[in-house]
Image (cartoon, rainbow, N blue to C red):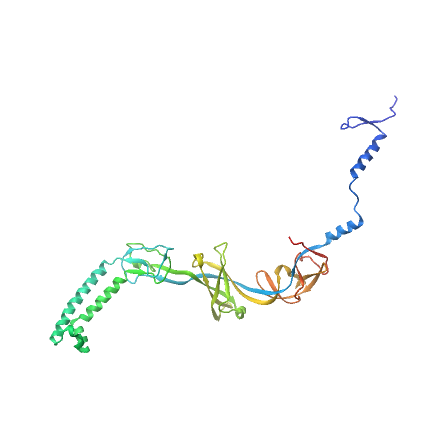
Length: 372
């Protein structure tokens, strides 16, 4: 059997035969074309890429003196600036309830009315008793030689004793009492406000509802809250406060401190009271609120909380200098929800690193993030 001296390779995609010796040359040609346009990286480029990978990208802050808002956070509950539990002074059936819960009323507006029929009858009898007593009094004066028209001529003692003997003084006192009771069948608003806790119903006995209702002036609220005794020296009348209701997702309401109780309780707290205006009636009595008490301190070096890290149990701040991070121990002073004041360790005009500092080391290479 004779063997062919030339090998033949079949490549289905090409659809033709290549001689054996030609095939390696074609393969080299194809690889050469594919490699054109991608040159190997130089040593300088490789070093630059490695350096970029080792750099720490950070955000910075130019440190300058400013006004620091010191804050203390507490909890309190809103109470209407003025409120009153209102009840009828006499016991009768309720005739009419002309208001409802949540209704705003003006000072002097009618809130409730009792059935007056029995009291009117007593008033009429008292009025009749006065008329009868007046006739007896006039008769007595005539017997003494005086006329009621000449009252200026009657001695004061004679005037008084004749009224007592005739029963006129007593009858007039009874009439006055009956008029007062009739007036007590009406309940009026002693000040402008909003009605609350009204459960009374018409035709029910007034004594079944005590109080009849509560009236609140909700244009302003008081909030009482505790403060640590160590913060006593920072407190002052007129100090600004903000309250944030837990029952609302939004809203901050500003007010001022009105009272500071100069007494530390058993828990080491001092009770403080503030007044909070309520424009638009967005607050209601009894709301639980977070209270933020503030005081402003000028000329302070202020850093964000993100700039402070712990190293070996001490406070550390990294600063920027010629693309290098410098490790500095600091002492912080006052604190609020976002910032600290620096008492020692930093100076004005230094550039403080505020992000990317958690894993930094002293003299680590850094780059400042470009501003967006």
